[in-house]
Image (cartoon, rainbow, N blue to C red; front, side, top):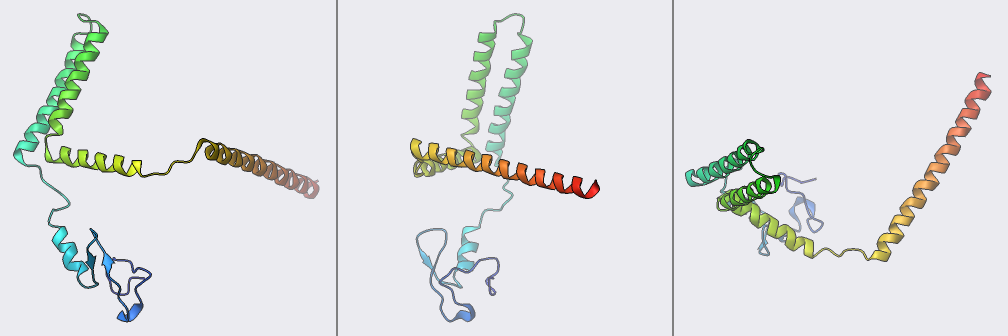
Amino acid sequence: KTAGWGFETLLACHISHGRLQAPLILFSSKRVFPGEHKARIRMNSTKSETQTLSRPDALKLAAAGALILIALVAFYLFANQLILVVRVMGLLIAVGAAVAIALKTEPGAETLEFIRGARSELRKVVWPTRAETTQTTLIVLAMVILMGILLWLFDMLLLWLVRLITG
């Protein structure tokens, strides 16, 4: 329950009716006390959820789309004149140029920053060892086989009971 905190869920350190209110950690490592969080949320939500593109960004994205479209048309138009390798290389170069243009826009920069953050988080993952993966896979296979046998036996029991009742 949120106890009048809007959509913010209460943490374990919050006691209802306001007797104890430990500081919250929102948006950064700065401590924010209850009551301050709404102002902080408003301060950080200056960008609208539906962002409009600036004119230069829209033109860059349109140019990138047009470049890909022209490359695709050329790929099929020159099907008889050029060998496949040349057409594929031209298409890949055009797509690379279009991606480079798109990354120069604000949405492209945000996407690139998201990818960098995702890669950074991926490096922090502790992956299981080969032995752990093998053991877990064998346990799952054994459980699937065991459950399959148990369900088969249960099905046979029910079939026997239905035949006994129906004659």
